[in-house]
Image: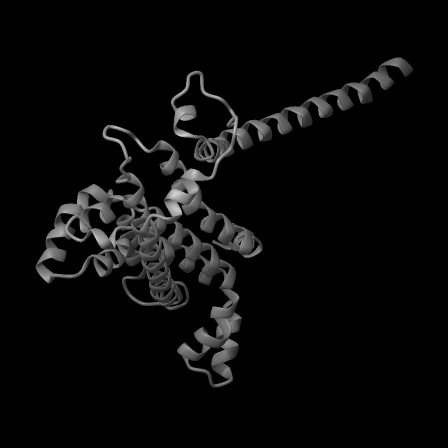
Length: 290
């Protein structure tokens, strides 16, 4: 009996150790799977052109060089594209948060006829692929004679705004109604209660949805390519990278493309690191209360 009793804890410990080892192995596999593309882009950006076309490929450059980064940062079209992308993504994010916060407040805290159908209609707007609305949207933009940059800002709102409204609506629903009632008892109007009481509590959700909207606008390619065909100076970074041309005919500037990809990824990584705590708080609160 003593031996059998002693074998059970040992067996449980072995199962626990194996389970933990498998868990960390899974984490390691996921980490390599997610980080390898960025690692390969960085390695390729540090290689020379002869080493890029060498077979078999090497996992690290023999002599790392910064030539590709210098070429990219010295490219006036790429620098201008970075500025345009920053302007477009920032405007899209601010407009999405401004309109989404008001809509989320109304849909989450107010009772009116058609509230539920409005929510499902907003959700349905996210189901349309970009290519399905591109032709009609381009015709409207041409009819209104809008410049490329405002066209991209208004077009991106079609995809960032529904997501922002839906997430913020769920977050506003999770806030206690007693806060709104207490503010009204103290004489605050609906807008004052929204501005001074409820809106500060939604900061984590605003940061989370705003960052996701910024990333979506920053990486968008199809609309940017279409609307900047006749206005090349208004190209964003995804279009500028796709249209990179080499110095020699029939040469694909793979090293410069990878260097540009690393450069445009750095701002997103910095934003995520800066707002990491608020992002986690927003995602956790939405998961619990939504």
